[in-house]
Every structure is written in structure tokens, then in C-alpha cells.
Image (cartoon, rainbow, N blue to C red; front, top):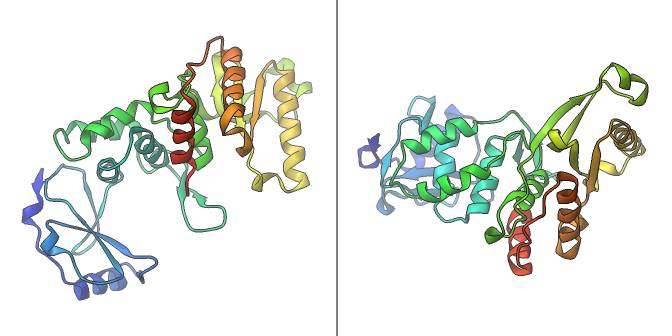
Length: 287
């Protein structure tokens, strides 16, 4: 570990020269550059800078060198930092974004496709070096619920709502795999239009899946045709497939969905209180 007190403060001009010259960025008030400082006194005074104070030890593997004099926070350090003032479900959602195949952005879609930034194993190793630091306790409590390979914020929300325990507002169902490819065998060639299908949430041993169907992705005839053929093919291979839309992610509709999936899995959902359920959905689907 290294000490935050060892850092030398940088002026706003030095930060501007670094991020604009070395990185080619143009920060603004609406899209600021976030910087880490060792104390409140070191915070640069500029509208395009969003400073974050970190005056504790810095575990090994926290920083990534981008250019001379410029380091970025590693995904693992971001996970630790963001855990400080958030609930376990919120931190688990952040973790699923880091180990998932999407990143949030400001486009109309709200996210973009990308490769995972880290893994649950790397997060666990990093947290093992971070004991006693700010956010470490919540980060460790959330990690068991972090599932890899999510492809969208709503897939993350659906997975967490179904699997988190009732004390957090979830239904305590068995944890699925996300975006698993399921293939056909030789006897099923005439039953499917594709050699394999990728399933959003998959409980493979029970041949059960839940597919989040967003309204945006189903505005075209091609999308409707694809999903219709996919669901028919899965049914012909003995799969139970549940189509989930945004409207089903609330209230009694969510209770019914959890009961339906639980029956397919051979388990009884652990019903959360309506207030905890609604709170969980709200924090996972905001923004």
C-alpha cells in the first residue's frame, strides 16, 4: 500500500494540460473530469473538476498509468470507492457493471456494449488487500451477489431482484448464469433455426430462462420475428422461457413473475415486503 499523504497536489491548470494534452479530453461543467485528492485543502477550484477526497492507504493494484503524471483508478479501486455511501444492492449492481459486458453512457439507449473491465475473482483478491478501508465492508457484503456477464442495466436489475434475499427486497431465488449459449443436439436440428441461443438469465440444470425484452429492442419486425423463433425453438427443446418487460418489474406483477420462475426451478420464492421490494426496484432501475 501507499499513502495518500505522499501525493503532491496539482493545480487546475496542470490538470487541464494533462487531460487535454496527454489524453485529448475536453472536460466541462456538464461532463467534468473526476480527480482523487488527499485532503479537502487539495481540491482544485474549477467548475469542470469533480474532486474526491481519499486520505487512507491505497492498496496495490489501485492505479493504472495512462501517461506521464496521469493515473486512472483501477476498476477494483472504483468498486471500493463507490461502496462507501451506497447500499448492498447498489454496490452489487456497480460490481455487475464492472464484470459485465456493458457500460453506461449518455446516449438514448443509456449504455454501450464493451468487454468486462474486471472479474469477481480480481475484485475478491483486491478486497482482501483492502481490509479496514472506507467502503471495504459494504463492498465485501455485496460481492457474493455480483454475477458476471450481464449485457444491460435491466438484466442486472432483474438478476438482483430475483436473487437478493428479502431483507434487501429480493426473492432469494437461486442465482442464474447470465448470457449463456445453449446449443442443440443432433436430434434437435429440425426443431430450431439456430445452432445455439444466448439466454439472458439461465438456470441450465432446470432448463429455465428469463429473457428481458426491452421496448426499444422490439420496435422492428425483425426483432419480433427473431424472438418468436427463439422462444419457440427453446420450448421445442424442453426449455421454460419467461419473457420479462419493464411493466413486469413492479408490484404484484413482479411477485407473480417470481412465483412463476420459482415453480419452474422447483423452489418457493422468499417474498419480500412490498416496501422493500419497491425500494429495491427503484434503486436498481433509476437513471
